[in-house]
Image (tube, rainbow, N blue to C red; front, side):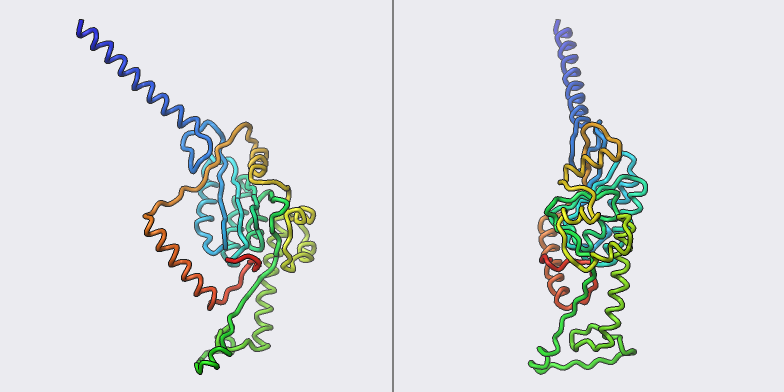
Length: 299
């Protein structure tokens, strides 16, 4: 009799374990959106976010490549909320978006602002969705110099510079630009502006002349951009998801896949963020940079 009770108990324990395992499997299979739904019966759409000033393209480019190679990812949404940034970083991201859009649907979804370099990277996508009030456009190049000559004279500080050529210290904060230097830099800006206009024309399938007409740095709303052909559709992030589903041939619900966030100690994160903020403050004061950036928002 005791052996029979033990047998029944053992069967119940085994059934309980099986039920728990089945429940865990079903929970994984029924996952919706998240950072990375490993098991899901739903089709998957990758989401790559560009937030803030564009300075380091590497994380974004890496994620685009990973999503492009992942056969489980059926489409990609590029969520842009940026006033732009460095010329070369913007171009690196643009190029990778173009390569990705050639093999997999890429939809750019504009948030509050997607201006200058923010628009530059967005126009490489297959389609662009913007809110009516999104601040975008600002197709142009900006180059800024800090001038300290008068301040240094007041405090009695001088600077001696030895150089191998006339233009070697062009943009130095210790003296004003000469007329020849201004002409040289204007030529440089014109060349980089030409690259911007051609990239927009190529990405949006628009005549270069048409883009050049509005490439004077003007800021535009999402509604104005749609009228000009710079945006395909007005809507929010969810509208971008629906458009991605439609273009990728996805039916039903989807799982949104976000890049995995790197984990670190709280103190390391705080210290690193503080150090980067301090570095950016000094860099913004003294550095000379040429950028695809709208200067209307604080960095």
